Every structure is written in structure tokens, then in C-alpha cells.
Length: 337
Ligand SMILES: Nc1ncnc2c1ncn2[C@@H]1O[C@H](COP(=O)(O)OP(=O)(O)OP(=O)(O)O)[C@@H](O)[C@H]1O
Ligand code: SF4
Ligand SMILES: [Mg+2]
Image (tube, rainbow, N blue to C red; front, side, top):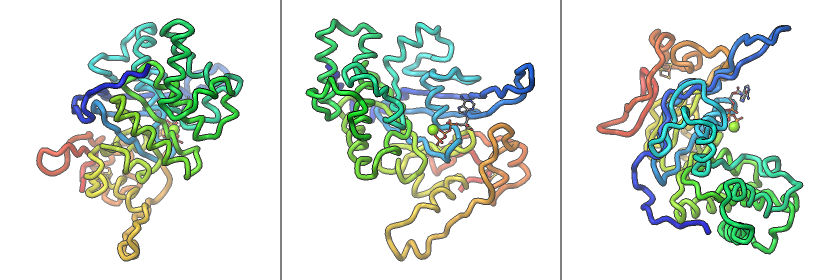
């Protein structure tokens, strides 16, 4: 039985707190297979997610979004930094303790075609975590699976069908049911709709939002693009080359972006009003995203930033409140606004 919780959606306390998170993948080279460098996929990420909210995590391909999500869930061992879930530091836990904690934090993957093994039935896929964690006898697990299928809008009648017999949207529902099986409080949804037909995307997004309301879930919702997360995120974090450059309430971020990179991303989104669209100023970013193997010094956005000054090449800007008043609008920029 999926437990419904009565906590108000915006209880406001921090559930996930990430500080200085780094994931540097070693690059092996030469005959001896020595480490010759590192891919700095995540290079000092600070963020927090409040209980019951959706934090959108947005950035271009390769900026480190998936690696951040995996490192928070301890699916990848962080190189440095701290990750607290409900006040418990995860990075120093033993393997056994992380395994137990994993029941409380789950991932929904981008591609429902490759993330579900086609040789297994839906029942086997959804019941696997319940069996691993010994959540009941065979009959109880069977009931639980049927209940989970109903929760995500799948008919339990199909429990013995194979994943490959289902459409993309239905497969993503199976992935969501599996993620919910152990009653987690925190879910990293890594581009959960980007592999689906546009017509199906809204249905899966609505399902995720309904489940959040019913079950009191907290989401880190990863997306490529600011327009995807606009309607579902309470707050949005913008990522560039391994770091968070801006973090704010959605309304603030879309209305008054403070970091030049966010301004450039927003300027690329078409506006429905033809008059506004006609006069919309687009910021065209020069050059490509630099390699995470050898990122630029200081603010790593400086080679592409039209506001860059000498200090930008020398000092890494700290992610700190930069908005008006006692704002919770954070930006990592020496010259925000
Ligand atoms: N296991 C790994 N070993 C080495 N490099 C990796 C590994 N996983 C990811 N990377 C590199 O780390 C960087 C960040 O990758 P990541 O998948 O986190 O980005 P992303 O923002 O999720 O991109 P996308 O939007 O394409 O999914 C990329 O340069 C990627 O090539
Ligand atoms: S710190 Fe400097 S280079 Fe970086 S975004 Fe701000 S103005 Fe641009
Ligand atoms: Mg990714």
C-alpha cells in the first residue's frame, strides 16, 4: 500500500542539502593505464531542495545534471562535498547504510526503453525492490504491486505482460511505479519525459505532479531546457559546466534572471505574443561549451560572457543571495543583473 501523507506541500524545511559537490572522473591513458587527467563533470555544486517542492535542474547537454543527480543519490561516489538527506550525511555512510537509505531516495530515468529490462514482466520489475528489501510475503508483495500499478494509472490486469509490450508513456509509468515501491520521500527525475512523444509528455508530467500532492514527494527534476521545467518547478537551478550559476523561485528566475548565462538561455525561448516576439532581444552566445577536462579559470562562463572583467578570470564567484531585499534568489556572478 502506498502511504498517503498529510504533510502540507510547502512545509518549507530543507530535505536535501548539497554543498561543494564534486565528481571528477579519471581519464586513463598510456600503456600503464595511468590517470592522465579528469573529467570535471560536477565541480562544486551547492543546492538545497525543500520538503515537498520540485527543484528544476536545467542546463545544456554535458553540463553535469545527471551526474549531479546520481551523486546526490550516491549511485556515483562523489569526489568531494557533502550531501544531507533529512539531516543525515550520506557521503560518509557505509555501503550497507547507503543501501538502507536508498529506499528513501529513488531515480526515474530518462529513457523508459533502455531503463526497463524487456525480458521481465511488469510484476517482476515493480516487485524487485520490494523483494530486495523484504517488504512482505509473496501475497503482500503481489497486492502492493497491483496497488502501485493503479497509483500510476496502469491496469493491474497487465501485471504479467512484458515491458516491451508497452508504449513509451506506459513504460515510464512502470518506471515511476518501481521508483515509488519503497515509499521514498525524494525522487530524482532525470529528463523523465524527453524521450516521449510530445502528446504523452503532459500526461506523465501531470501524473508526477498528482503523485507529489498525494504522497508528499520531493523532486529534483532534470531538464535540458528552461521552458520544460517552468510549469512544474517551484524553484529552478541553472547549471553550467559542473556548477550551479543561479537558483531562485521560478517566478523570480523567469522574470528577473540575474546570471548572464540564464539571461542567454531565456532569451532563446520564443514568446507567444507576436508583438513581444518581434521586439525580443536574443543573446547569441559565442563559442561552444568548454571541455570539462580543462575548464576555464575563475568563472568558467567568462570566455562566453559579454560582461566579463579581469576578476572573472581569477575568482570563482560564490553562489549567494543577489536578489532584492531578503531574497532567496542566488547567483554565482561578480556582476549580476
Ligand atoms: N562515467 C563517466 N566517465 C567519464 N565521463 C563521464 C561519465 N559520465 C559522464 N561523464 C562526462 O561528464 C560530463 C557530464 O555528463 P552528464 O551526463 O552528467 O551531463 P548531463 O548534463 O546530464 O548531459 P545530458 O543533458 O546530455 O544528459 C560529460 O562531459 C560526460 O561526458
Ligand atoms: S562572473 Fe563575470 S564572467 Fe561570470 S557570468 Fe558574471 S560577469 Fe560573466
Ligand atoms: Mg543527463
